[in-house]
Structure formats: structure tokens, C-alpha cells
Image (cartoon, rainbow, N blue to C red):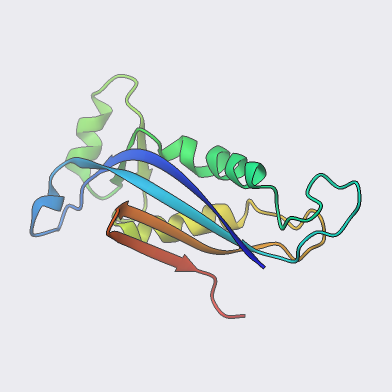
Length: 149
């Protein structure tokens, strides 16, 4: 069984080597979809009985480990020295320095790595993260998916 929970957040970024508008500082309303696989829990009295994982728990974990960190932050590549230095001059600015250029592809992959370590098989129903889909715009997104075992 597959289940998916969608969350949204706002963040700024720039693609320093881009040849068009994306090289400028700008922001997006990102949408994050977290897809988990697992067996439906069949355990009388269990809070998640009949579920793969309670959607409120899927949301809480994604918020705690990713969304709350990236929401209303500027996501900047560590190698983008002029922007890193500029953001450091803004007192209390919420900046997330990444080891990769913050394209939607790289961000989806980074989100998958962060969240893969987060979702655990608590009910022994073979729960695991299968996909992170990150929308940069309503029409553009990237999927980071679990590699074939």
C-alpha cells in the first residue's frame, strides 16, 4: 500500500550558473509530497489500526525534520560565496546553506535523504519512504525515488 501526504512551504533560492531569470534571488511556494509504502496495520487497539501510518504523524515528522527548517528560509549553495556573504550580513536571517546548488532536483534528493532516516517501521508493517516529490511551481517538480533494492 502507498500513502502520500502533501505539505507546503515558502523559500528563496537562486541558481548561480543559470542563464536566465533563475540566477537572480527569488522565491517559490514549494509543495512537498511524501510517499510511504507499507502494509496496512491490522492491530486492534493500535492508534494506527487500518492505516499504513497516521497522516498526522507523517506530517509532524516531515515538518520537524525538513519543512520547519526550510520554510521562509533562503536556501543557498555553499559555493555561492557572494550570496552566502550577503546573507550573513542580515541579522537573524533564516539561511540554510546546502552542499549543492538548490535546484528542485537537488532539493528533492536532499529531502529524500533527510526524510528516509526519519520514517521508521514502528508497527512492523514494513514502512519505508518510497518517494519525495517536490514542486517548485504547480507545473514543475522533481521526484526522488528509492533505488531498486
